[in-house]
Length: 334
Image (tube, rainbow, N blue to C red; front, side, top):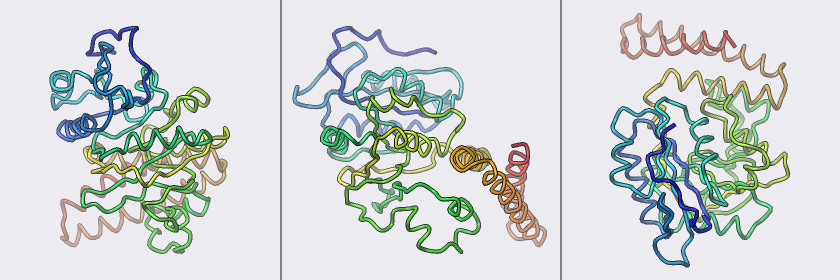
């Protein structure tokens, strides 16, 4: 792996926060993300080891792992953001492995996983650090995440139950008992509140270094999706708490990298879902869920094929049939 930055000086001050960003072909969004970090009330540590700014500010480093982007990301980051530690492995390492590479290199006492298609607002980062510092029993926390229009994304969760597996993010979701999904999405608590949850989504997730050192990094069996669910589950099993901090706000534009690989997104989402339920609910449930998903995708493929045969948006229907068939093959292979 090549790190496009000078060697780090032994004189580096104590780092409060490491911001870890894995990026793939979202150069313009990454630029906006880094600019928002630069505008935050932080003292950014350059790779050479000098901490600029006010000594009263939190000392932070930024690590970007570029996953073999073809849009010129590495050169642009190296040129415009010299305070970023840039890793360019030369291959698409994926979200989970990329974050593990960054976690292994990070030196902060707190570690923030941050998507490249995010913008940090105001004092969100100091607020998250201050919350962890004031609540030593909390090992992982997440901010209030906003959509581009300012509405709140649903990023705090309770652990999914066996019943949730068959309703959430499937064609049955519209028929789910409202109480079931409201509980899963923590819809009973205010968006601007601060409270304990079971897990928070990985687009913006802060963890103590002590958590990472105790339970290890993300499980790379989850290429993408559910890796943060599993990480929070392991943290809670180890005795840590997880919290949602509504006073810290970060905008997430959402799915900008995965939109480039729509079929792979479907496959990884379902494979990760099966991996989680096999790990925490047993093989029997995972097998039942796999069969349910195979039937579901088969029915959707047949429906899209029929609509296409009738001449309704044939190109769209053909693309969906190809996607669903690819998912069925992946699920059938296990």
